[in-house]
Length: 473
Image (cartoon, rainbow, N blue to C red; front, side, top):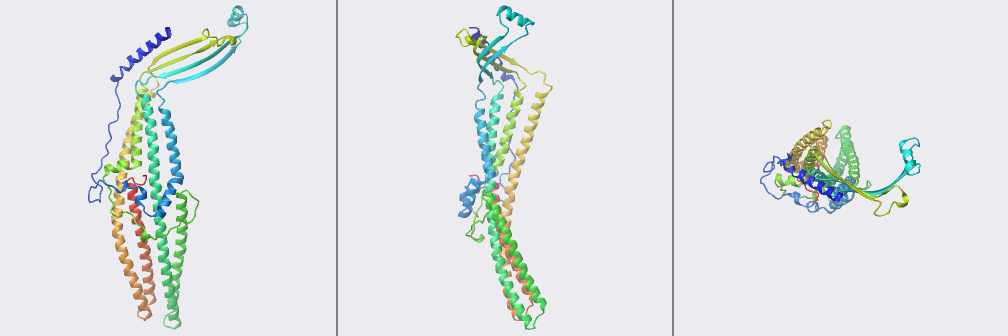
C-alpha cells in the first residue's frame, strides 16, 4: 500500500505542475512570409501553370537523354549518398517516436565485500554473522520517466521529423541538379558534334582552296605567299578538329561519371538541330515556385527545426518532473536469492528539479538558439530571393538567346553565300586569295558560334526547368 500511495502522490504532483503550464510564456515563431512579386520578370502573363510540373520524362523527349537521366538517378553517387542520408534520418525519426515512453532496463549483479577485521564493519560481521565477508545479490528492473510538461520531448520529436524532411528535400534537390547536369552535358556533346561537322566541312573547303591556289601559283599568276596562307588556313582547321576531338572525349567521360559509370563513349543518334525542348514555356507564379523548389523547402524546414530547438532550450530552464522506479529480488545469500516473496523488493521515487544556477549556461543556450532562428529566417528569405533571381535570369537568357539564334542563322547564310562568291571571283581572277580565306574563316566562326548559341538556348531552358523546381518528379 505504501508504494501505491507514493505513486498517487507523484501523480497528483504532476497534475499540479502541469496546470501551471498555461501561465508560462511561449516563444512561438511567427509565420515567415517571404516577399514575392506577383509575377516573374520578363513574363507576359501570370499563368498559374508551370513547365516544372512536368515529369522529367515528359520534359526531355530524347530517348537517349532519357536513358542517361534514368541511369544517373539510379547510379549517381551523390544521389545515392543523399538517399542513404534519408534512410539514416528515417531511422532517427522512428526512434524519436519512442521518446515519450519510459526507459526500462534489467540488471543482475553480485557483490562480495571483505572489510578489514579491525574495522567496525569487520568486527560486526564476525560478531553477528560469524563470517569475515558479506555478499549481496540483486536482480531488478529499473524504470525512468520524465513528464513532458513543457513540450521538450515533443520539440525533440519535431526536430527529428523536420531533419528527416530536410534530408528528403535535399535528395530531391540533388536529383534536380543531376538531371540538369546530365541534360547540359548531353546538349554540350551535341554542340561539339555539330562543331566537328562544321570544321570537317570547312577543312574540305580549305583543302580545295589550297589546291586551286597551288595550281594558280604554278601557273605564275600568284606568289608563294598565297599558297602559304591557304596552307596555314587548312592547318588551323585541322588543329581545331583535334581540339574538338579532345573536348568530345572529355565531355563523354564527364557524362559517364555523372551516370555512375566508368568513362566511355556516349552513343547518340541525333544532331543538335533535331533535339527539342518545350518552346512555349510557362514559368507559373513565384508563390508556387517556392513550394516546389526542394532547396527552398529544405531551408524552410531548417527554420522550423531552429524554432523547435528554441522550445527545447526554453524547456530546459523550467522544472523537470522525473519518476524512477525499480523492483526485483535481492538477497545477501545466493542460495535464497530467488525465494519469493521473501526476496522481493521495490521502490518508487518522484522528484521535481528546478535549475537555479548553471553558470548562465541555460540562458546562453536559449539566447543562442533564438539568434540562430533569426539567422535561419534571413537564410530562408535569401534562398527565396535567389530562387526568384535564378528564374528571372533563365527567362531573360532564353528570350535573348532566341533572338540571337535568329541573327546567327542569318549571318551563317550570308557568309556561306559569301564563300561561293569569293571562290568564283578568285577562280576568275577578280578576287585575291586573302578574300577567299577570310570568307572561309568568317563562315567557320559563324557556324561554330551558331552551334554554341543553340546549345546555350537549350541550356537556358534546362536552367529554367531546374530553377522552377522541375526534375525531381
